[in-house]
Amino acid sequence: MSVDLATKSLLHDKLRFFITVSGVAFAVTLVFVQVGLFLGLMDNASLTIDQIDADLWVTSRNTPNVDFAHTFPETYIKRVRSVPGVDRADNLIVWFMNANLPTGAVEGTEVYALEDFSRWNFPQGVVEGNLADLRRGPYMVLDDSAKKRWGHFQPGDYREVLGRRLKIIGRTVDAKSFTTTPLTFMDYRLAQSLNESDLRGNTTYILVKLAPGADAESVRAEIRKRLPYNDVFTRREWAERSRKYWIESTGLGLNMYITVFLGCLVGIVVVAQTLYTSTMEHIREFGTVKAIGGGNGEIYKILGKQATIAAVAGFALGALQAFALRPVMAKIDLKLIIPTELYVMVLFGAIALCLGAAMISFRKVATIDPALVFRT
Amino acid sequence: MSILHTKRVEKHFQEGREVVPVLRGIDFAVERGEIVSLEGPSGSGKTTFLSILGCILTPTRGEVVIEGKTVGEKSLADIRKRSLGFVFQQFNLFPSLTALENVEYALNVKGVKSKEARLEAQRVIEAVGLGDRQHFLPRELSGGQKQRVAIARALAGNSPILLADEPTANLDTQVGTQVLEMFRALAKQENRALVIVTHDPKVRTIADRVVKIQDGALV
Image 1 (cartoon, each protein chain N blue to C red):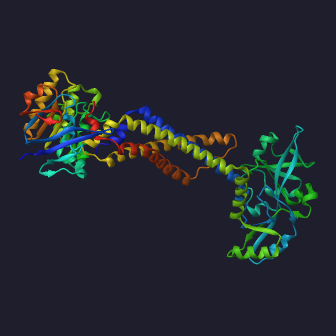
Image 2: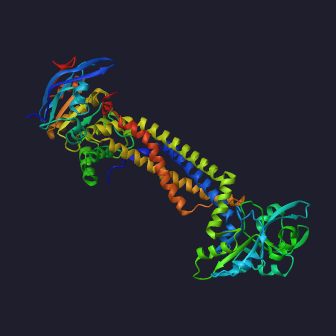
Image 3: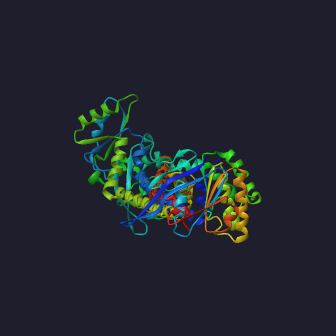
C-alpha cells in the first residue's frame, strides 16, 4: 500500500483533528436533532390519520387539519355507504372538550369518538382495558400522556368531562396529536351527548374503507358528487394536509431550515478554518510535494482525503450523539425520528460540506510556489 | 554528453515597476557521475539558478536541456518527477512520516507503487546508514540523520541528477563532513550528477569541479 500522507498528517496533530471532527459532529448532531424533532412533531400531527385504517376521509369543506374539525350532518354517511366501491363507512367525531380534575383545575382533551374502534384498528397502543367496552356506558379510555396534565390516573378512576362523570376503563400509549392535548377515546353517541349543542346529529368526519379492487379515484369522485359541500381526501393527502398546516402556520418548517442552515454554516466555518490553518502550517510540506514532482492534483487528493476523513469521523460522532439523545428526549415527551434516508443524506451532506470547506485550501495550494522549499 | 546543460539562461524578476536581472546568460553543463560545487556570495543568484536547474522556475530567456530534451513550461513537474532529486537546507521532511515512509512517499509521487517502493526505500535508507532508524519520525532524529533521510529521498528512484541546496548549513562541522563524504560516495557509486549550491568550503573537498557565480554570471 502506498504511504498515506493525508491520514498520517491529519492524525499527527490530534488536538487539531479533534477540533475539526467536533465541528462536523456539532453540525451533524444539530441537523439530526432538528430534523428528527421536526419529523417527530410531524409524525404526531398525522399519527391518528396514519393509524386509522381508512382509505378515504370525508371532511367538512376546508378543514385545515385533523385536530381542527368542523361538523356536518351525520346522515351524510348514508350517501357515502351507497356509493359503489365503498366497503364500509363510519362517522368519526374529533372534538376538544374540557375536563374538571379532582384538583379543581380544568384541562382540555381531544376526544376521538367512534361506534366501533376495532373496525378501524384504532387506537393501536392499548395497554389496559378493552375498547369494545366503551359502548357499554359512560366510559372512556385515556392516553398515558394525559398524566402530565391530568395527574396520575388508573382504570377504575372517574373524571368529569363537560360536567359528566366518566369512568376510565383503559389506557393507551403513544396516541398523540400535534397540539399536545391528551387524547381520549369514547363511544360516538356518548361524545354527542356530552356536547349536544354542537354535536347532536352531527359528525366531524366520515371514514371510508374501499372494497377490494375498488378504484379510489372513481369512488372519491362519486362521493364528491353526492356530497358537493364536503372535501374528500385519501389517507395520504389528508395526513400531508394536516402536517402542512402545522409547518406553515407555526413557522416550524422555516425554523428547522434556518437551524439546519446555521448548523451547517458553523460546521463549514470550523472545518474550513481548521483545514485552512492546517494547510498554511503545512505549506512547506506541500511545496516539497510539488518539488519532488507532485502536481496540484496530488495535494488536492491529500486535502480532499483529509476533509472526507473529518466528515466521516464527525458524522459518526454526531450520529452517536443524536442516537444517545433519543432516550433523553423521550423522557420529556419529544420524539426524535431519524430515518435511514436521513442518515445517508447527512453522511453525504457532511462529506460535501467538508469538501466544500476544503475548497478554500485548494485555492491556496494552487498558488504555492515550489521554490519556497529553498527558502530558510 | 552532459546530462544537464543550460544555454544563455537569463532570469529577470519584476520588483514593482523595475525589472531586476538575477541571472545574466549562464552557460553551464554537468556530466553523469560528476560533482559540481556552485559557490557564490548571498544574492549572487545561485539559488535562483538551482531552481531553474531543478525545473522549479523557468528562465526568462535561454534554455535548459535535461537528458537531451529541452525543458518546456508544461513538462516541469514531469521532469522533476523523472530526472531530479533534491536535498534542501531545511531537510523538508514530512514530520508525520517515518524516515522510511518519507523516502517511500517520494517514490509513490514518482509513480513507484507499494511493494517496489518499500524495497527501494529500504535499500537507500540502508545505504545512508539509517537502517536502524528507519521507523523513527523526523523529530526523533538528529540534524545529520535528517539530512541523511533527505539524501536517501533524493537518491531513491534513480533520478540521474541530484541538486542540493546548502546541505551542510544546518549541521556541525563533523557531521557535515560525514554527510558530504557519504553523499559523494553514493553519487559516484550510482553514477549520478550532483550539483551542490553552497557557502561551505568543505564542499570543495568532495567536488570534481567548482563553479563560481557572481552578480548572476559565472566567473
